[in-house]
Amino acid sequence: MDNDIKAKNEPDLLSIEKDGIRNIQEKFRCKITVLRKAFNEDLYRQYPYGAASPCGRFEEGQVFITDNRWDPPEGFCQWAWGDLRPMIQGIHGGHSVILISCCTDGLRPVTFKLERIDAE
Image (tube, rainbow, N blue to C red; front, side):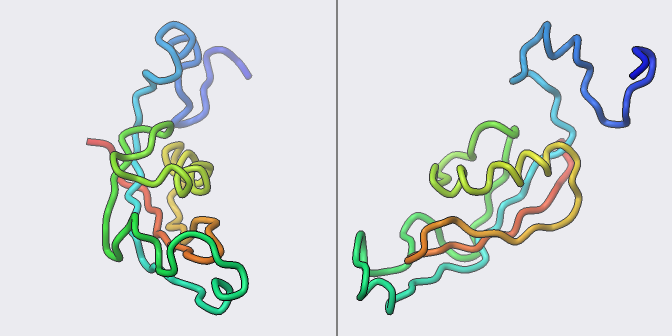
């Protein structure tokens, strides 16, 4: 790629090297909405572990906004963040399609809506 030509929305690589990856000016954020909490009671009876109830870390309708592509919002489950992080990083990079995904707790899955919003 010619040094004088950059792809649209591509960060300045020299400034990243100089300032560090965490100092990238984010153009977008990710709005994370909890759509649904489930509890697979039949599976729990066969393979019990943890609480016999839906996830206690989230509430349906709860909304989180990311500040950057690297760190979860305050109070967000680290396990769910690990599952969703690749999609969230894509949204921070400009991906504009609304995504529906869930965490990987097979007994107590939580379903999320991920959407791009402009950084303020």
